[in-house]
Length: 222
Image (cartoon, rainbow, N blue to C red; front, side):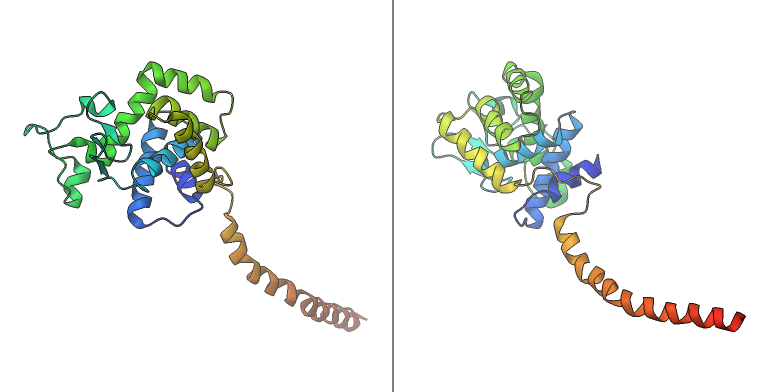
């Protein structure tokens, strides 16, 4: 699981801050743990990138609607309507507690719970069934999956425009798709070239020295 999670994160083509990488890791791990593919996880990450202003777990839209967290779960009539808020019996999540973030008043700001709620939307609703059926036609096309995720899971008002925008974001984040966990990244290959070049440069002199050594050996035998 960790190798696949790392493959998703290492495939992101833009620089990530430590906080952004942590949020991306949460999203990838939760989607993979639910049995969803790394391509769906990448598409979900692209949607969260758009929804929460580049993976800000405390993003809160109170202008047009009360939506919060990584996936901007809506309080009224949206996926966030069944998430506890203002209940003193609701414990602070381990994530928030370990980082000093006060999430007790609204669990939507907990990135783990926020992501798990959107995973439920994929796994347990008719919208999720339609989404999974739709992406069966392009299971590794991250931009297309991101557009379908926006259309069926996020369901914004301007669905056509928003879906196209999510596809563009997904392409910018994952221009090469998912880099296999067992395949060196292009950056690693680039760093290795000087060392390989140095070895190749030494090859001709070594071959000459070895040739003289073999000649002298056979001369000493006869």
